[in-house]
Image 1 (cartoon, rainbow over the protein chains, first blue to last red):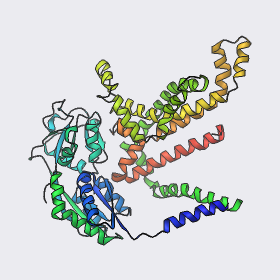
Image 2 (image 1 turned 180 degrees about the vertical axis):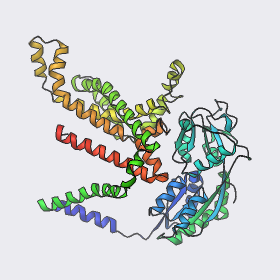
Image 3 (image 1 turned 90 degrees about the vertical axis):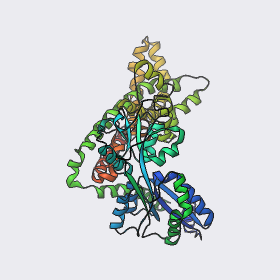
Image 4 (image 1 turned 120 degrees about the horizontal axis):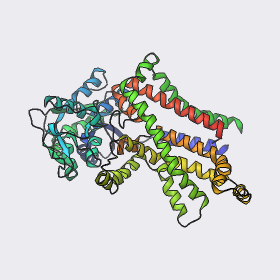
Length: 242
Length: 254
């Protein structure tokens, strides 16, 4: 039994060992995966004492996590509505829009089904769940174009990356994703533009989470994102300026 | 000696009980009936039932001969075969889904021919969801069935043969009654695993309401939009799974 106590003691000591390093968690929309990974690398180089953990998912999911008390320090979403929900609940400080994005259709390389626009979306189409901004915007875009896709031919991805993967890896005929995801997927998909008349502009807000235990580092990360360097990374990934 | 063991055991038990208690605390009992009869919930329940039962049948059909060969025949590569058959037990289900895609998707080396020759597409179909569940559930059946076949003293079968029983009679009257409990336990375990399958299903079969959106997928995706429905469905999964495990423990001492 002495052995058991030894293990318990070791566990306690392990948890208690204090570190002088600061670590922050950034909860960011899945569409920011590439850009934020790069920004975080640059941030880490400039702030060697701060560890940045990136948590990507659908903005709706991330907002729900933060609402449930998940320990995030910075929130960056693909939709101002998700941020407004948190702001109303008093969970985040003031937010800034730091990027914009638009939607596009992606198909398999070579566009084997000959998709030329929203009206051609027949067969299984991959869309984001309606609680993710990309799902909400896709519904807006389809409605604006007067196109209805029966729910029985829609496979729903939990976030934009999963939605795109159903086309790139799976057998979905097409997906509606952000322009930036289509660009990040490069040759794995072909892109079919959605005309500006029915397209929608997504605004990306960023904010420091109010109960952040490392607010200073969190603010520094937010500043890095809205800085000129951050803008450069974002525009290289295809994001528009606010 | 006993007291610390009991204390540590209680801590471990609490670790399992507390999350479940938390779940129970979040159930909105007043609307439970309505939550479970909402469209997405009903579709998910029905689909899960169909897919998990289908996957169990496929697991038994495929797993029975596999378990028998593994238990009774000696051949080079048997360990490797067993390893392959049990691999989905330890493989992350999403990896299983990706592997299934590379074989059975329209561009996969099997899927391409299935489509070309028979016009069959497995991805995004209920059959595909069943296949994904079978992939992760069959090892549970194979494991239990192989152990069952191994535990039989083959002298009973030899005795039956020496008394003039034909092979079919030996299987029916001697082998089957002795392995039946193991087969039943394996089938129930496989069914329970299929019922809870998430990663391989969403990766391979997609997430189409009424077609491939099984209970675990519905829970995951309703959690944001309709948390009450998600919790109600979770409760169903917990109750069913717990019931299965408790019943198994009493009857077959797994």
